[in-house]
Image 1: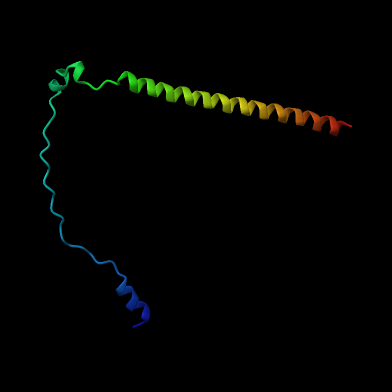
Image 2: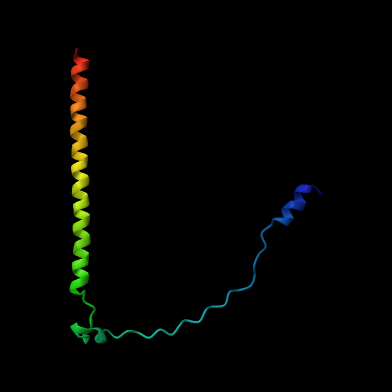
Length: 93
């Protein structure tokens, strides 16, 4: 009997013979679709004018930020184009 046989027995997977019992199904009440049709429009949550205005302000600020970033990138591209033209002129000589 070698040492390998001893280690094989230690790390061998043990078989589980017990059966797992089934879990009971929870009693969930079914939602009647007719209840949804009877809801009044007033009972639904509608965004108020203040929240809509606040969201519009956030969107406007975001668009302004994007505009500034776009202008900054355009300025960088123009500078790069000028540098490339100068490099081309120097390389042509």
